[in-house]
Image (cartoon, rainbow, N blue to C red):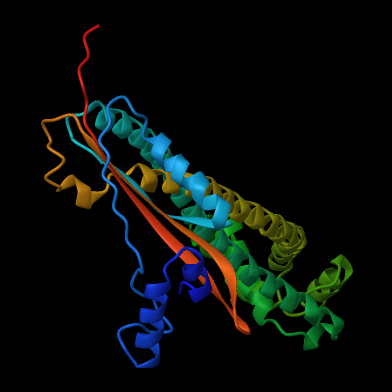
Length: 328
């Protein structure tokens, strides 16, 4: 609200008495909210060969002498469709929109890749869980070690490395093609081994019950699996660390593109024509013409008793331009 001292300073004593009387008696003015303007001035000026900036900046400089805080409330324009101003503006607007489309398309592509990377991280964590559970069993005696995680890893080894049942060199393929029927059972029943010595000792203990040819093939497959498990365990740990760093980098790049696109979005909003003025009768599509709306809020803090108030002046500028053909 405008303070009474400020109004008296500008010579509005009658209006001050009216405001104070209506406020104390519960009239139309309130102590909060946006009060009605005490004074409203409207100036209409039509001048030829005068820059639009001249009256605006003159008033702005005058306001700055008494009001240290000035906020721009509105800054909008409109132009008729066949005017040169419209064509130039739309060219600038199109360039900004093309940049926005490029940035948003790139950002959308990278966000889509983020979901794939997160899915890959989940698969890596799932595999590492099997490896860690199998590795934790090595602290127990050989034949007391759990085999669930080891069996799962052996299934992945047979399917992904050996080619599953379709490959004649796999555990299932040799059982089918070469009639090593007990080979799959012996392969999957073997416990996790710390080293090669434990593996060989386990196979030697089976010599009394099984054919030596089967055990020879069993040792081959167990040794391959043991080497594959140790190598892929380290590979998965390194890949997880790499994926975490790459995921962070990917996310930072997405934030960078979003930071770049924000100014272009603001520019597009500024270059967009004011729709209410486009329907104004002062703006005809076939004519050369434009309309500009500018509004500023000038205020300063003044002391009123023990508290303070804001002295406010709202200045609204409505420009309408008309072209003129000159022949020199």
